Picture 1 (cartoon, rainbow, N blue to C red):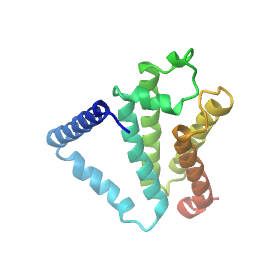
Picture 2: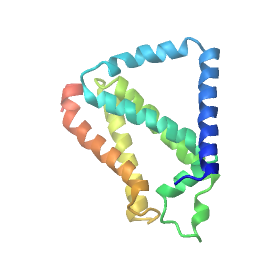
Picture 3: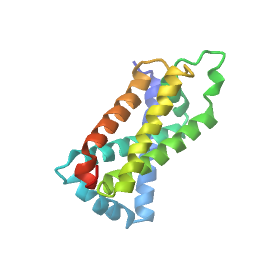
Picture 4: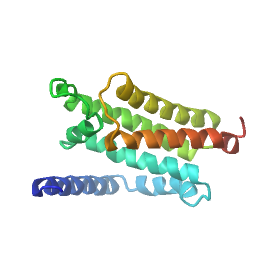
Length: 178
């Protein structure tokens, strides 16, 4: 259960994000229609892989924003939950913001992968981004033992493995090359 303080923090955070989005829309009125026009082919496509990549990108944007907020550290500590109290100082504001930046870069690669699935180079770059993510989380779990296999790390593993298998099996369909 969430405490009253946690609910208030989440409410204020969501209000803050909504306010920022409204300000961006007001300041840059042409940006929102351009984004919608770019994403229309994905949204109305009968192909599911681009939709999946778009969905993961949108989720990653919010994860990146969280990493720059006060609640980001507590959420990051849930992923790297095996750090002992002695080593718990490894997860601090700097590492959280770094993780947010890394996630945002991966998000942009996957967004381009969703938009340009027929471009072989973009497709490969998107595929590699999932290999890097799986390698990172796998090494944190197996080599560095900073994680334990629980709900905090299950999500990244499921997303990375599902995406890699799906993209591997569908590469020829989208890019025309094997």
